Image (cartoon, rainbow, N blue to C red; front, side, top):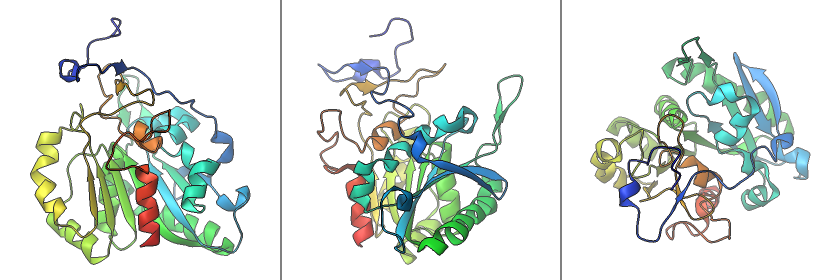
Length: 293
């Protein structure tokens, strides 16, 4: 245990023989040079183009959109990592997907003199964000062959934004991957997802310190299980690559909220073994299945 910080609220529940890990085991920023930046619809964005890294021209590729969490826009290019997008530019991840565009829109967040953050993702971004994605698809990818499928990852506040976008434009996305989100959309939206064959990967940890699993997720599980394409991923524990139970303390504990960290690592430990038996190929294996569908 680290005696310089408070014990996590779940510390007395960890299994015998387990240990707490206080930081991700990967290096941040190693692949930032693979990304470029742009501006559209009043927002900055980062992007990765597979065709600039050896993938064939005049071919369609999937587009993977990553929406960051609250205050992450204030971190500069580190936001690429915090969204869970950085490793998707690596040859390993790209080869598993057969090449993919990556798009990371950045919210217009600000921090005032009292430390309060404003400008986080909310309903006011719905149309501008949709327009930004369309602009990237039409103006950047279309002359190069275009995209085939569109996937949207969202972390925390970004997860909520994926739900907002999916509710407003249910036929636009092929898959939504909200991670650590809160309230799940109503039945009308879930019906629309089924109508348009949207694949939903719901990722919420059972000991999430921010969005309570028992209050927000459990009451909706039976409805989610009735969907055509919904993978429910609700792990008992969130791990770091060293097989330790994840703790992140930033004035509040949120290690179990940050499920995006192992998702970024394809739910794989540093030694190459899967973190969760139900996903032996990680989230990339699930995405491969959607691409083949």
